Amino acid sequence: MERSLPNILVTGTPGTGKTTTSEMIAEATGLKHVNVGELVKTQQLHEGYLEEFDTHILDEDKLLDEMEDMMKEGGKVVDFHTCEIFPERWFDLVLVLRSDTANLYDRMVKRGYNKRKIDENMECEIMQVVLETAHESYAPEIVVELQSNTVDDMESNVERVQMWLDAWKKNNV
Ligand code: DAT
Image 1: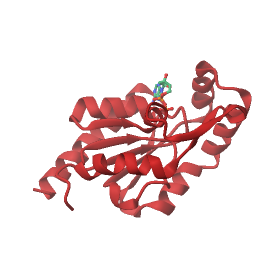
Image 2: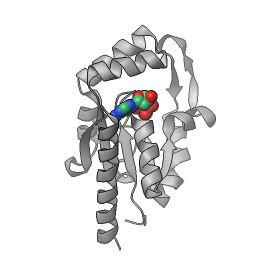
Image 3: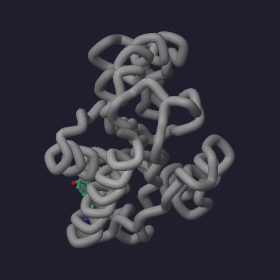
């Protein structure tokens, strides 16, 4: 492995706390947060906007090209709701955040999501779509499911990542 720091993927249904958790991880560890949703918008890595689904149509090839060099470098915390589009080799740890449906529902209402988007995301979380996709896309030993219902959950998740990172550094000197 050529990178001197690991890359972590933080994935999960929208609203499970990926961005907040990734920011906290970056703050605690010095790894760099890569918010893929923002990158897609600011770098125009999409083929337009789908009003009906309130989402951008991702240009996967452009996105992967844009990310390749930064992932090679290592030390990134990548935050995205979809996990199967990335090359498996990019990641040393894949965190799948999970939230109880009541929490998730409240967060999405607060965000002003339309009913269709709320229904879709609720179903996604109930059916464990992201967790199953992560298991299909990455080696079982690197996929970790984490509860993200409370601030305490987030803090203990960040602590876990810190411990994991320390161990990774020891094993990769
Ligand atoms: P995501 O990036 O997965 O869409 P987010 O980090 O933007 O999620 O969080 C959405 C909102 O929910 C935000 O206001 C913070 C809150 N939130 C997320 N996870 C939480 C948790 N474990 N405890 C308390 N609030 C949480």
